Length: 366
Ligand SMILES: C=C1C[C@]23C[C@@]1(O)CC[C@H]2[C@@]12CCC[C@@](C)(C(=O)O1)[C@H]2[C@@H]3C(=O)O
Ligand SMILES: O=C(O)CCC(=O)C(=O)O
Ligand SMILES: [Fe+2]
Image (cartoon, rainbow, N blue to C red; front, top):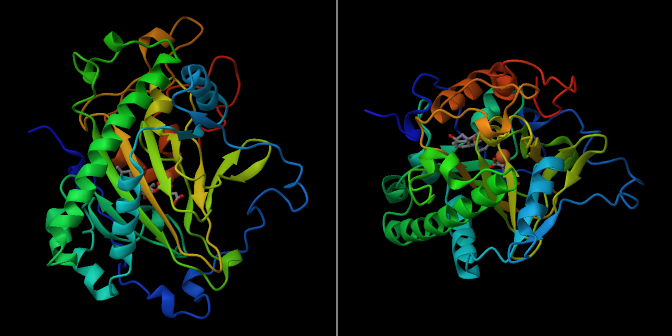
C-alpha cells in the first residue's frame, strides 16, 4: 500500500510531554519556558527605521506576477500575496475555528492530543524535542479529515468546524496549485516536466497538512519563543496570520525581519522540497515566531507537498555540466523522517555536493 502523509512519523515517534500549561493563568514566565534573552530579536535598535528591506507583497492579478514571484523566491524565499482569490469569509471562518479550538479547556484539548508516532492532533510543535526549553505556543495539526478529533473537541459542533476546514482545504489546494505553476514557470518549467502534477497539471494527488498555531500574550516576551527557527519541509507553505505580528524571516546580512500582517494578504514561503527541486535556486527560508506582551496571535499554515511517496529530485531542465544535481531524490515521507531525526540539518543530510560555483548555499542549514 502506498504510504500516506499520516504515516510519516511511524518510524520516528517523538514523546513530547503534552500536558499543557494554562498560558492565560500565568503572571510570570516559568523557567521551563525561559529562553536566553534573544539579542537577535530583530535587527539592532536604530537600524529598524533605516532598514528599507521588506518582504515583497505581490498582487496575483499583476500581469508581471510570474517574474515578481521568481525574483522573490530567489532573493527572499518568502513573499506575501494579495488578490489571491480566497474569499475573506473563509479566512474569517478559519480564524474563528482556531480561536474556538484554542480557547477550549486544556483537558478538552488533550482529548485530541497527537500521539507520539502520529501527525494529526493537539500538542507542542514536533520540533520542541530539539530544544531544552518549551515554546510559548500550542498547535493543532490536521492531515486528512479532522472529523474524529473534532468530535472529541466539540461533541455538538464538530460537523460545522469540519466543514470549515474542508472549505479552507479546497480553496488552499487551488491556490497552492496556482502558486506552484507561477514558481515553476518562473524557472522555465512547464506542465510536461512534472509528471505527478497529472495530465492537466492540477496537482490532484498533492498532499497537505494544516498547522493551527496559537501564541498567547506573554508576561515576558523578550525571554520567550513562540516557534523556534526552522524551515518547512514542504514545497511551499501558505500562512494566514491574524492582525498581530510575530512571524520573522532570516535575511542574510541583515538578520531577523518581521513579516507584518497585511490585511487580506497571505504569506507564501519556499520549503525544503522546492529548494531541492530547484537545485538550490529557490532557497527555503528560515523563519520563527516571536510573541508579545499584550496580544494573542493566531496563525494557520497550509503545508503543501507532493504525493507522500513520489521521489523529489532536482529538475533535469535545471541541470547541466556546470549545474550537477545538488540533492539526492527523496519522497516527502522519507524527508519528514529525516527532518524528525536531523531537524535543521535535514537538508544538508540529503545534499550530494556543494554548488560548483563554490558559493555556500546560505539556506542549506548545515
Ligand atoms: C507535514 C508536516 C510539516 C510539519 C510536520 C508535518 O507533519 C505537520 C506539521 C508541520 C510543522 C508545522 C510547525 C513547524 C514544523 C517544523 C513542525 O514541527 O510541524 C512543521 C513540519 C515541517 O515542515 O517539517
Ligand atoms: O506562526 C507563524 O507565523 C509561523 C508558523 C510556522 O512557521 C509553521 O506553522 O510552520
Ligand atoms: Fe514554518
